[in-house]
Image (tube, rainbow, N blue to C red; front, side, top):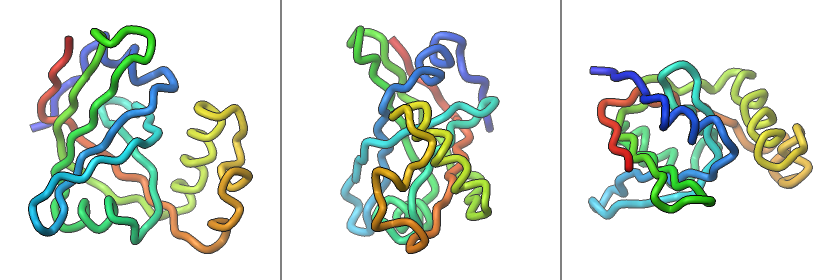
Length: 136
């Protein structure tokens, strides 16, 4: 069951805070990756490229955990447990990574940082519906 994101967590996720997403490898070992994220309503959206380890893990097991840690205050953190409820591989995924690039890097062309990927990778948005939020 989806839950509402508390206001203090919204404040954290509406800033350019690099978050960690945890997925589960096929052997059961957790795998964690730092990523950019956006809060869209009560969903957390993460963007990646199809075929990467986290992508393969999420497709096999859509349960994930996102951890955000305020770089200015280590006592301000949030753990969001949930499930990917949608994989969006449409043109919206490219627009989303460019939006995140503008927020996090000040340049709304993600592929200016990753020119080797332009036209060679399929972007995907993982739309995460939270089921539990822990916060300090």
